[in-house]
Length: 167
Image (cartoon, rainbow, N blue to C red; front, side):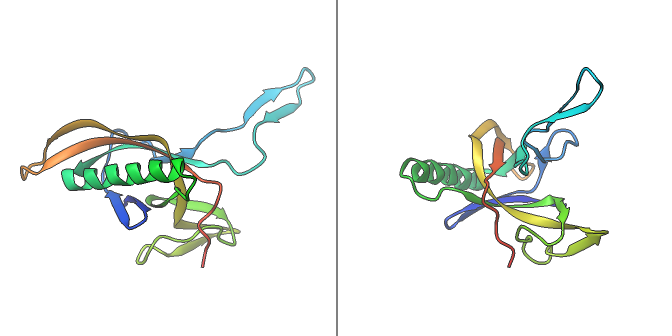
């Protein structure tokens, strides 16, 4: 089973279980619109650049992990307001990133750093720079089966234009 981890400064929180449906947690933020002209020609409207990824999911966190996420959100907002670097490092090992070779992003840490060749394309678990599209939100609180306090969180992240450089 995969995970999504976000880091800012010295803090990291890992989301291991995504709640609800089978919708992949990483999608493109927008897709081009396809229309037909009066003569029947295809017209494609939309960005000509690579569209950023969007992660929108809910996950269960222990209360200590929820507090780390809150601290990351606080630090993120403070850095943003003070014109400091506020992008977070996001590692996604739920779904592999597919692109034409060579790699444009760093791979996930070992042992999940394998790159698979698929014709002239490659597939790998990648790292991204991400921003909060919406600040994390506690949706529900409760207790796990071991009586540990937990929080169901809603998270929406969008990929930054800067890529985590492959090394």
